[in-house]
Figure 1 (tube, rainbow, N blue to C red):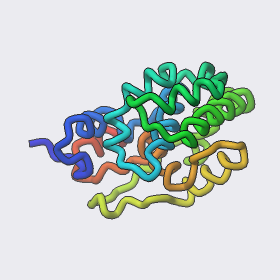
Figure 2: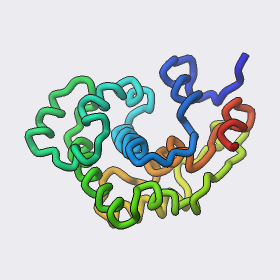
Figure 3: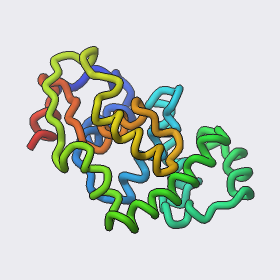
Length: 188
């Protein structure tokens, strides 16, 4: 029997996400943008709801192509607010468009979003050594700094808790519990 973090429960989608993606250090700008979008939509909801709608988000938001999303108009916002395959929150939809525009600005300034975002952890993952899921923080000084800087740059839905969830997803922190089979795999 495989020992894993307890948070995926018995849900197949959550287990697959945990086993294959969560905590793996990411350096691909398109994938980083995808997690930025998904984590923003998670605000106030469960991660399971977001994961269950991931394919709908992928289709609705042009495969998470931030260059295309940056050009979305009010007409696109109205279309997306009617799309039952995603979470139909107008503020979060508009924030995704704004964030795509700001994402492009960061790429221009830093060469890539990857170079920019990883500076908050000194360009290497923080390897936490938690025994229990209950020890995982909701935010840290690194996520506070990330949130503050993203907000200054005009990003929306990037509070410290959302930023920390993003850091976990993007492998900027290894928050697998030490008894989880993924802990050692991810920390390599």
